[in-house]
Image (cartoon, rainbow, N blue to C red; front, side):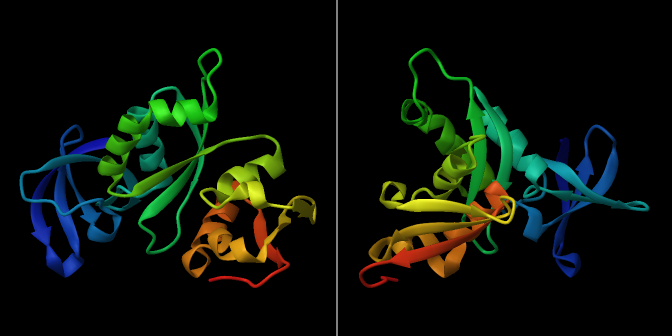
Length: 206
């Protein structure tokens, strides 16, 4: 993580020219990789995305940046993976939690709402925390939330756990898929398994 101060708006590069305060060098923060619109003089944090000779490019959308922000804002979590879909206004993040005695995942989410809200503001995106599990089938179900996973009939792992079929009632299939397939796509990226939603019975609803 590096701290920066915005020096100049560079429309020709669709980027901000920023000054890295610790290294005392200039860098570019592309607008497509920033979480907000900055004014000259504003400060922020980012990760180094690439270095090409003297040109340093920063990012506020990289997995490293998201991991830092999640673990900074939400106490007692460790980030395992993250996934987002192009043009989506949300990101799914798989985390493990240092639970308090008797605490459940639902308890943790309830008590962390203010922290998660601050995280949403920091990333300028809705963050969906997903409970990490070493059990592949359970992790798949967790990753498919907020779809109604209690309605899932079965999860079948295929091809040495690189693919999985998820059987759901036809009337709920659209919720599992998400808009333009974004929910199942992000869930698949999160668990690193190609997921296929298989509807059964009834009429599939969009």
